[in-house]
Image 1: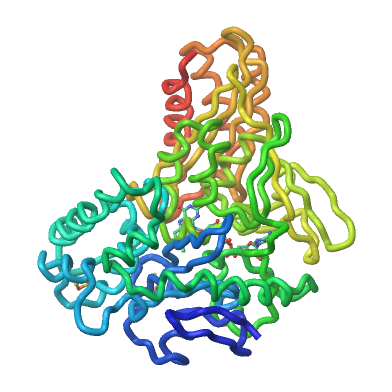
Image 2: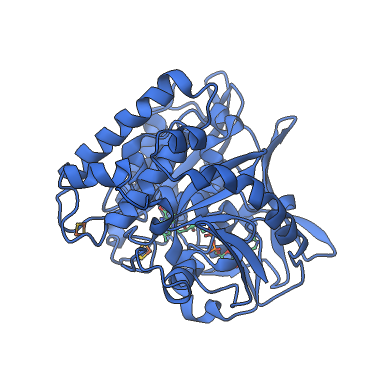
Length: 463
Ligand SMILES: Cc1cc2nc3c(=O)[nH]c(=O)nc-3n(C[C@H](O)[C@H](O)[C@H](O)COP(=O)(O)OP(=O)(O)OC[C@H]3O[C@@H](n4cnc5c(N)ncnc54)[C@H](O)[C@@H]3O)c2cc1C
Ligand code: FES
Ligand code: FES
């Protein structure tokens, strides 16, 4: 049985855990306000809110229900558009959308409203515009939607300035009648359901291991829906970002959004917010795990490239024994991994960059946001004075696997940066890569692009 709360209703279902929440909501609960657009996480028409208890508080995030298995809802509060309606009036988010002419055919509107409700419930300092970065509208031209978001931001401003210190987002949103009163009763109900959900978690080996599902459901939706699934998304032992000495340790269910709000990550990587903005959208970042990015083994996986340059290490477990493997040794060929089917990533660790270190990530895609990379690259340099003591350079989109450029990295060791050295670095890089021409660019373009990204790494360096 999977137990969770859907809007105000407690659900206990024995439907397949791999069924996506979108189908459960529409076809089993007959709540048709949540729309089906792309079923690939791109359009945002199916956006829902997912609330869970974290550090004793309710914490809501927007997610795309087309990619979320109901198994990942265990012990949580799922909110569809029907769950934020008032019986006799529009809520202020809906009213702002209507007043500003921000809805025409209306197909995308529930998704926008849910993302904006997520903004109103959020205790972090995300901007109102960034909360709708996963929603696409075909009709309005976006300006009316932007005006509606400004109205919502101004409603929330009062809390941000004066009240956030003593009133959490849920209390504020219910008191201001932005969201229905029942939201304030959910935490109490969820405590019991969450306990049962954790007790029921299985660690047996099953056919499929699912993280956030943002790769699996795009690639193998039909297969997974009825498959025997093991979930790693919410296992308490796999959550969390911690620091031991100079090591940063990530549980394998850490998502991109978890990294975004982590003080450890933000201190070590001052540009992290800009990097994260280049990767997918808010709802996808709320679901996408770093471990899932590694195992999906896409040659252009952004976080794979990021962590390759940090020489991240994986702790793999088969349930009985564990072993440590450098991320750069995981990839044996296109989608071929040094990992047994029964093994999963339990932890990821890497050494945090120190004061004499330089780290930089670059990504170029056809569209700046919500697009996969044509080529991406990261560099991590350990400096002694103005000489490079150690270099790690990674690159994606230039071979069958995400690449750690060993030869180029070795060449950089002991060097002082100059225009001549950078020219030599680019020539050595060319001997290590084997890009192919595809929809993201020709082979020649990708070679040229990686050269430019290497220049960008050094142009951005402050030594
Ligand atoms: C709209 C959209 C935009 C996207 N944009 C980007 C982007 O800009 N950049 C980018 O890099 N990616 C992007 N992605 C891809 C995807 O979001 C990421 O690769 C994500 O990190 C995958 O994580 P997940 O938890 O969802 O993986 P899942 O889909 O759950 O799993 C992926 C694979 O990893 C395995 N797996 C998961 N967890 C573990 C574990 N702990 N141990 C062993 N195996 C495991 C699964 O079995 C599966 O084989 C996008 C996806 C979508 C839908
Ligand atoms: S249906 Fe398009 S994101 Fe889910
Ligand atoms: S109003 Fe028609 S898609 Fe947005």
